[in-house]
Amino acid sequence: LDLSYNAARDAGAKELWCAMAVNKRLEELVLRGNFIRDEGFEEMHRALSPEDSPLLKIDAGGNLLEWPGVRHIAKALHTSRMLEELGLSGCSRLASDAVHRLSVVALEHPRMRRLDLRGAHISRTAVVRLRRRARRRHCEIALAIDNVTVLSTDDSDDDEADQPVLWE
Image 1 (tube, rainbow, N blue to C red):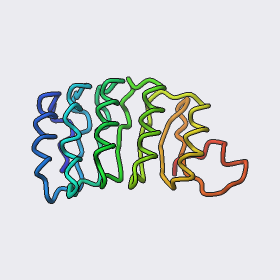
Image 2 (cartoon, helix red, strand yellow; image 1 turned 30 degrees about the horizontal axis):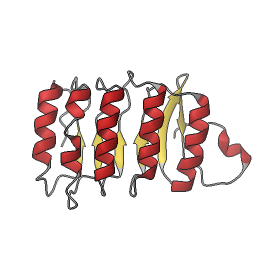
Image 3 (cartoon, rainbow, N blue to C red; image 1 turned 60 degrees about the vertical axis):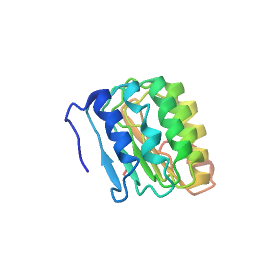
Image 4 (cartoon, rainbow, N blue to C red; image 1 turned 180 degrees about the horizontal axis):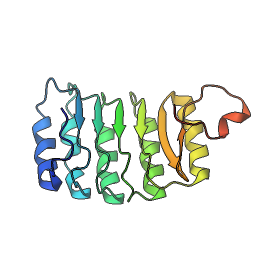
């Protein structure tokens, strides 16, 4: 279901998350560019907490997410067992510590395969640490540093794996 650029804002997002709690079919939800702030992610855990939730992919990129919203998303990821992909690219208000924390939570998630945080702020040191963790979990984390997008998956154990790999 693609609801991109519909100006849903916080109130619409909250209503949607609550409605998704009874979802039995929808596997993909796209909410790009809906002016959703931190408050709009408060109820996200409702959509992901039912054990039988079929939701595999959420793309909420291009919204107005900051540190409080990251805490809500982290809570939702802790309750989810099925989500495989989370897209937050273009959430340029995310600071490095929020990006790092969200990445760590996603890498601990049992089924997470792709976390897209391109456009958020993160230090090079944090990228190196996250790449190592992602390698162990066989998970992709897309990050951008200085307008160069890096891919955080590399199954090899050689020393070159710490260097950025361009996103394909």
